[in-house]
Image (tube, rainbow, N blue to C red; front, side, top):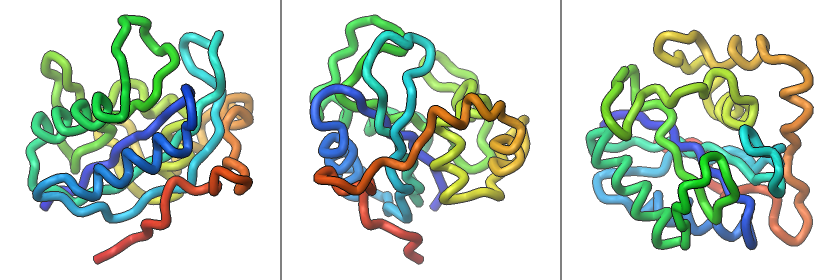
Length: 178
């Protein structure tokens, strides 16, 4: 089994419900075990900033699926939850599942780059990833904790732990399982 980290994001509709549905489907993937899920974080939009804030989280998986098959499974989950790809880059979405890191794999193929491009610059990914795996080495960039420490404080200010109101606050109750 290989370890993979998946970024989850949503900013349309009931985002907490979308994250929970995605997590439940990740847990049912063949040849895969859901190991842990970070808390959910409210984050300012990145890239296209004229849209609602996001809820973001990270899931850690153990899987025997190869990277391309795992990516295809993530895209299928997005479609089942209602994501419509309208061509607007970094635009609003019901759910977004990104294959961030797959062990120490480095790939640059059409439609699949590992580690995920720019993940080392994005607080909305590094904060929940740091919660799960601060010592994780991002191939070609360094450890998650060090990358997070190097970010500008302004970037970090846009990432806040989601409140625990009616939405439940955490993306799921999964914690490290062995």
